[in-house]
Length: 232
Image: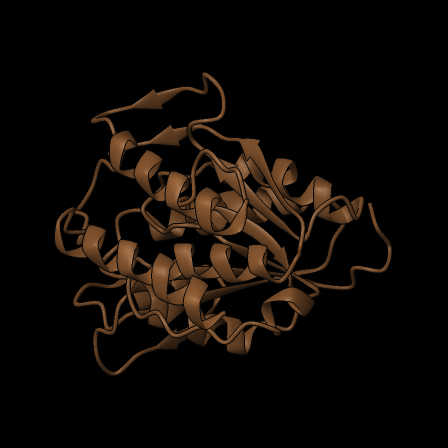
């Protein structure tokens, strides 16, 4: 492990995930205790109507509660502003990402082989369960990003990521909802930073319901890719 990394920040956006958030935090803690890295776990509660915030606090995460429901992108941007680590990890709160795979994302950064590492659900035959995610839509987004920036990725929409904070600090992020992943990737690729993917598994949520609208949010993602490229 790279001894220059003094602190790792895990940023978790949460909206009505009281069935899963406690387990996610516990598993993150267990995975990171094996790395010998100091870490902080930050939960941005996006004005949940359930006990997501209370449960997160009871599991000793730093919790920041938004006064209005603003969206995943806004929540992540708030979390980035609160994070103090040299490496920042984003992970979903619904349990679809496996915290046990965190070392896979961290290793390229700790070896200084990448600036952004994306946990890809598509780059290998990793186990999945439940309904299939919209692979066709993701392929369209991947193609657009490749044409515009030259960044060849298999899962541009993955929310399971690790990145250097010094890279993140150079970005001016504007997204409020699910287009945040595309905006980040386009701007990081345009900046000439190194993007790498590692294969991760994926489990469809078993509690609650996703707020993503394939048509509305799909259009926002497409527009975000183009606007992020044009505005740099």
